[in-house]
Length: 233
Length: 197
Image (cartoon, rainbow over all chains, first blue to last red):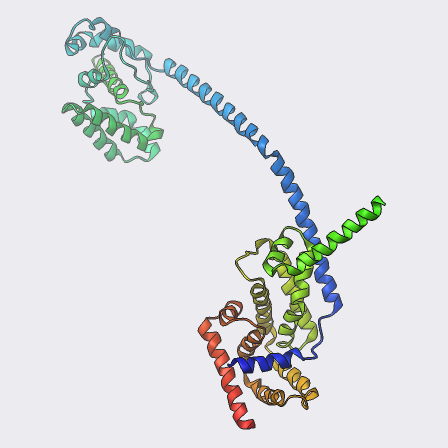
């Protein structure tokens, strides 16, 4: 369409006698526009008031931070007291042999004494939840793993079978994990064994497994001794 | 004395404000309205109420329906003024909303664009003696009744001063489609010229 044609049409249409819209329509639209503007100004004032309070908003954050910090401290305190009340590692036997340089030899002589003490506490394996600290006797975490092997996997799993069935964890995978851990300990890759155990327990949080591999090793060992005592009468 | 001076200052401010509003662009007025300045909206309404109404009126036969469409369009502008982006031209936005309302109306009740041609014929019959070219246009336009509503709308928007891109934006069509609609209208126009000559 050429510009001339457009101009001609424009001129004709500009001269058109088409009437305007009614004044009622004008009134209605302008009234609505005024009301909307008033509302906007009102909400703007409200928003300004809220903005004025904004600098005080840190109070809420600060109070939340205080509450959380106190909560975390309380929870930690609770956890420590619980740990102290649960199965405590009895290192008396270890302490007795601490003077010697060969821990394995020491352990051979003190197994019966340790058995008596730990069996008297009679804690289920699932509640073993001791955060293992370096032994006062000087027996390190590595030495625990090397001295007390996770040799009876089947028995250990039998003890844990209820928890496995509850948690829905595949028993075969658990068995595989313990076999892996055992073999890693045997080849001396203790850190990898700990890592593997860490992965394993994250998959079965509900099982209530001990937190560290050392706890599990000691508990399994105690359990084995307890069972052998029971069998021999 | 103080009162008179205050009154004078108030009147001066009001006049200045009115002048400022007249000088402001559509987009600036819309932004001012979004902040709660009702006078800015009044200015916008004054600028476009006739344009929009005539655009709608030429495409729907019933005046009361047309008023309703115009009312709905302006109310949509009022409601959505908070979301208005300065990058979009106000006039394009207004006509796009008007177009959408019109299309909704067409979907419900069918289209009737004959108003435009009747109007043109009436208008030209009064001034027939004055300009020959206008008569020619009237004859041409009387043959344009066969155009589809979309083609008529494209033509009206072109007359309103919108570019092809803007018409495409308003009617939610591709630029090529708009061009072909206008080309089709021009073809009719040429044929009519040939017949009349």
